[in-house]
Length: 112
Image 1 (cartoon, helix red, strand yellow):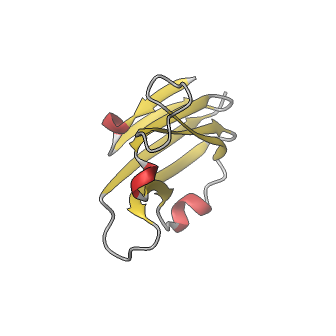
Image 2 (image 1 turned 180 degrees about the vertical axis):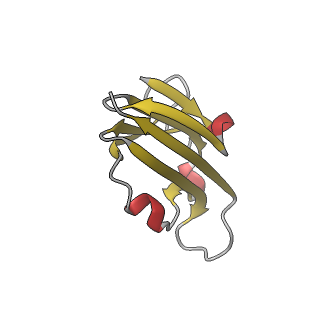
Image 3 (image 1 turned 120 degrees about the vertical axis):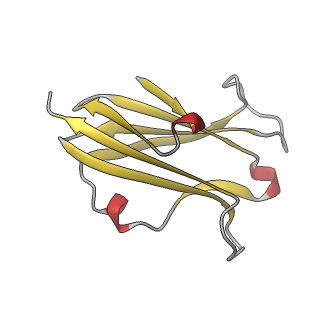
């Protein structure tokens, strides 16, 4: 499994079909802020990368205490050759203002 974090913002990573990727983004959901996919037709149209699981835990992957900050883990699997552009926004769902932070990643997937 390839493990990525916020330091990969704006970068390109290369996977092979069948590879799995873990994206770890720091978050404090108790403040209302959460990482959410940005409205992007590019991600919706990508068939090369599939989201397989989303979870939240303390930084060391133990269960988080109520109100504590932690890490949003988003897992993907490369299912076919091609490209995918991931874009996430850190925002409160009820606010229409610009996101507090954003994350972008280009994933190039090579055939086995």
